Image (tube, rainbow, N blue to C red):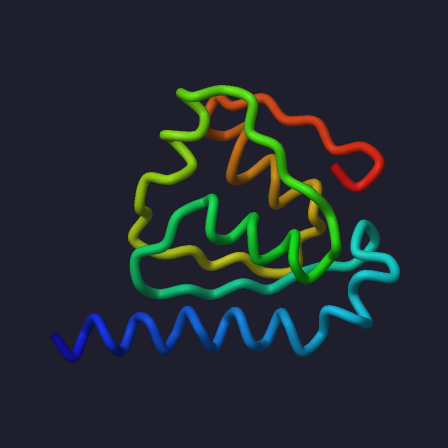
Length: 105
């Protein structure tokens, strides 16, 4: 039970850190690099959703299979100094999912 509380605190810390910098990052997120470290189970959807909140872009999932894949738990994510596009490639293309990112969508 304590492990569950601990993982929620870590993820909430991740969320809070992104939200603290949201105003600064939203101005030009496409040229920024991100460091994301979540040591407990997390989904790709949660990571992309938090990035979308921090960088003020929209996410539209058009495929039920892709929706299922990005909502599967991963044992953790440790991303160092990557741009949004490279993060998308890492989380989506490397899992055989197609994405496009234009006009903040």
